[in-house]
Length: 68
Image (cartoon, rainbow, N blue to C red; front, top):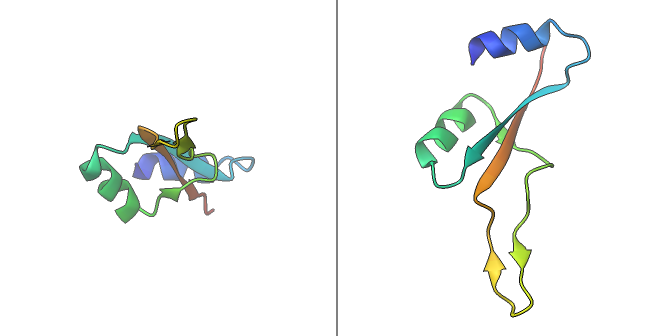
């Protein structure tokens, strides 16, 4: 992950790095959050079905702003 940050900081057009993580994988989610990744605006929202049932997405998109 550190290598990704180093490479992306050297590319002027890159504003942030993004990744997809399954919500059920709590260990990975905690790992990425400790590295500074946060839920991205492109992460899917919960859907409300016609019968009113709320369905949470199976994954979340996390991102981190590139500094350089």
